[in-house]
Length: 293
Length: 311
Image 1 (tube, each protein chain N blue to C red):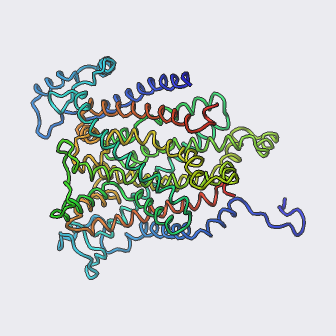
Image 2 (spheres, rainbow over the protein chains, first blue to last red; image 1 turned 135 degrees about the vertical axis):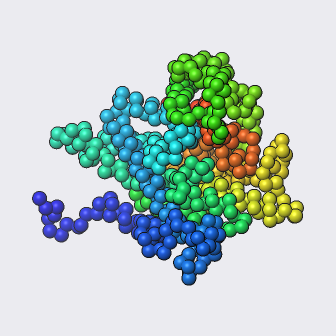
Image 3 (tube, rainbow over the protein chains, first blue to last red; image 1 turned 60 degrees about the horizontal axis):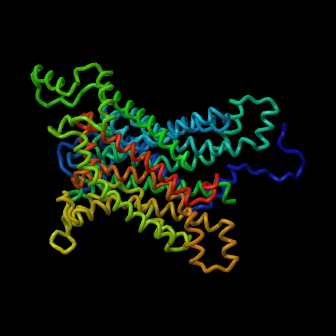
């Protein structure tokens, strides 16, 4: 069946087209998005084009070398002679991956719990939300540290642990949105035409809460990256020679007085990324928030 | 209202128990223990050590005896600091963390709230961008960078000037020793509160009751202070509950970098050394604090928001 009902019908604009329109009018958000894409691409593909590997020691220069183009150390080396740019890009890969994966874990659990609690309601809602309330009280920073100490510095465990912390707020947000959607006419229509609960949640509720969820996601990723750097500071981050922005910044901060460059390079990459995520999140909120229209 | 309060407290108790149980078994079920020394220890000595701390008993027995002692207010002996109980260690270190945390929180509120209001009232003007940019910077730069930078500036570069401040240590809480840690601890919170305050103030100023107040011809400052501020403070209050609990139980980063004998540093040391009882003790204290703070926030909410009050 065609969407056009009569000739000359004005082209409809979906919520997403609308939002995209408003987002692209926000210069800070667009610039942030572009920078984020560039940083992600450079982190993923950059290491293949550099003359030095991230864990390779330049045995002729086991010292913090200033930037030297002839040797291929474009941003110099760290104190044991490893290429700083290669390490920073590798660290970017790890930090961004942790941020994305942990947020995805939070996203999946949060949306599932939140939408079921909100839509099914009654006792299910009571039970699930009481559980979320209880989880909020758990001192998670402590728990994550205990986990990391006990099970070793495990990359997979790290993002699962962080994700398990972050899903709570997501569940609350999704539940709230679901509650307001639940009694809208289109949900009644879906139910009247025989949609099952699962079907309605998947096809009608979740697509409609995605706007709010995306805003939260863009603001959660930088938090996770910061948390990872905090774990690295405690010596519980990823293990050498693998590295992350947190590990690099921590190493650099210790060398601050002698070699500020080893701090500045990874710190610049990380802060710019976090800045961009925050600006993008703000822009998305303005673009997607129905209250602002 | 009292029944509501009572219910919150009653929910808190089983919650604490669940946390204690999870932590207990998490730590005991993993390999390694508090007595993994660098050099191998003769098995007889090891057995003695383990018997001394009841680590040779079956796990369920250890668990029950831990809970039993806990009910009597005994958090057990510390495995590493000989002759100290965990209770004594916490009693020593908690006040230090409390003082620092409270000072930082007060500082954060004193600067963050006015800065946020200021930015909100000048939305999208140059001064708004300055405040917003600064607060974003405060959020994205990790504390361990700012504190190490502060140490470098005030502890090393300005060593021979009047601005010199100690680069670390506590010295029984001398004023100079507190300045840097408290400021570094407060920075991200100042930033976050300012951001939160700006957002909620902008939103509140658009509300209908503000328009009414304006239509009545009230002076501008009266609208801000008497009408908007109360509503705009709500998100800040929500944020303050768990955050205060967190900040009071000691910043692990600040206390490690500035070598402050607070509870956060003990937790880090305890976790790395597998000092089971110490880690448990700190976790319990902090969970109890979070529960308490959440209840407190609930009460403040009732004062601030008439909608919640009449529910």
